[in-house]
Image (tube, rainbow, N blue to C red):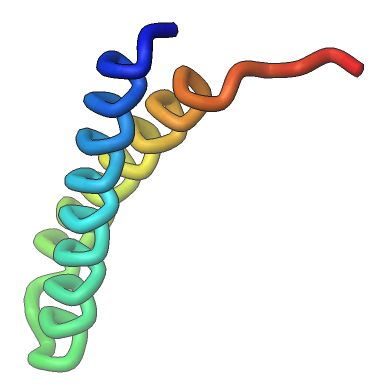
Length: 67
């Protein structure tokens, strides 16, 4: 994989990690304020989708090496 493509993937992964952390903070704030459980559950699903995207990007960045 070319270095430029790999750098773009790393940048995208870093942005997604930041978004994941933002969702985590928002969810914690919602829990503390006693927000609606359905809203919290939806936020958790969005957070999980982001985590899955991060995992896929990391798999592209770090290829599987069969030893």
